[in-house]
Image (tube, rainbow, N blue to C red; front, side, top):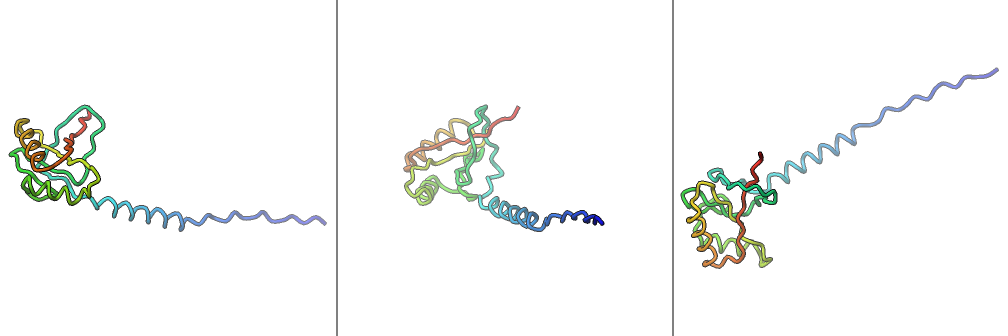
Length: 132
C-alpha cells in the first residue's frame, strides 16, 4: 500500500525583524535631521541657475536691512569672525554667507569687505538654485 505524504506547509515569514529595522532607521533619521540649526526665516536667498549651491547650517545670514546673524542671533562682524575661527579649528573651511535677495549689492560687498578686514580668510556666498 502506497501512502501519500502530506504537503509541507510553508511557514509564514516573520516580519517583526523587518519592522524593527525600519523603525530604528526612522528614529535615526529623525534624530540626525534635527541636529542642524534652522536657517534665518527673515532671509530670502539669492537665486542662481547653478545647481552646485547647498546651504550649510553654520553660515552667516545677512538680512535685507544689513543686519548680520550667526546661528540665529544678531552679531557684529568681529563676533562672527571670532566665532567662525573658534568653530573652523584651522581646517581652512570658508566662511559662508547667505544674503537676502533684497539686500543691495553695495551693502553685501561692504559686509564682505568688513569680514575680510576682521580676519575672515576665504568667503563663499551661498545661493539658492531656482527651479523652473
